[in-house]
Amino acid sequence: MSEQPGVAGRIALGVRYRGTAYRGWQSQPGGQTVQDRLEQALAQFAGLSEPIRTVCAGRTDTGVHGLNQVVHLDAPVQREPFSWVRGTNRYLPSDIALQWCAPVPASFHARSSAIGRRYRYRLLQSPVRPSLEVGLVGWTFMDLDGQGMREAAAHLIGEHDFSSFRAAECQAATPIKTLLEITVRQQGPLWEFDFEASAFLHHMVRNIMGCLVLVGQGRRSAAWMADVLKARSREAAAPTFAADGLYFVGPRYEDHWGLPAGATTSLPV
Image (cartoon, rainbow, N blue to C red; front, top):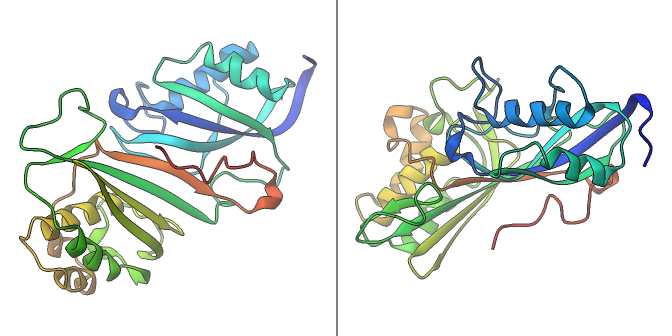
C-alpha cells in the first residue's frame, strides 16, 4: 500500500448511516451531523489535524437515514481504496460506515454529476406504536388502501411545479422537478414507498407521504392529490410526515464514471 504524501486525486465514497442520532447530513456549528463525523474520521485516518471536506450527492434532514450516500473529496494523501474504507471506519461511530471507495476523474461531482436520486419510506401499519423499530419506520394505526395511494401517486408522475410539497426553507432555484416513479407495496404490516426523481425539494418526499397516507386512510380521495399539485401552495397539502421512516437510497450516475457495479442501484431488503 502506497502512503506517499500529497494530493492523490479525487475519490468517491459510499456512506451508509442511521440518522436517528444526528441533526441531518450537513455540517453545522456544534457538530453532531453525519458530515461532521465523517470528515473528522477521514482526517484521523489520513493523520491530519483539520477535517477533510466532502461534497455529498444529497443532503438529508434530522432523523433521515442513508443507504448509499455518495460523497467526493480530493484526497490529501494517497491510500488504496480498501484502506480508505477500513481505515476510516475505524474512527466512525457504529451507526455510520463507509461501504466502498472508488477513484474518479477530477470532473466528477457527487451532486451535479447525479442524473437521479431515490428515496424510500418505510411505514408500519399497526394498532400500537413501534418499539423495536422506533426511529426506523413511520407509523399509522389505521388500515391503508394501497390501490387508492397508487392512484393518488400517479397524479404526481412527470415534470410539475411541486410548490405544494416544498418546505418554506427550501433553497432550490426552482420548484419544477421531474418525478419519475412512485411505487407502493405492502409486506405484512410494513408498507414501502419508493420515489425516484431527477432531484427533490426540501421535505418533498415527507410532504407527499403525508398526502398519500391521508388518501390511504380514506380521509381524502385519490383525485385530491391532483388538486393539491395544481394549487402550488403548501397550505393545500397535508402536514409533513415523520422523518423516522425515510431513507436516502442513493443517487444514480452514468456508467462512464466507473463507480462500483450496483453501488447506486441497490435497494434495501
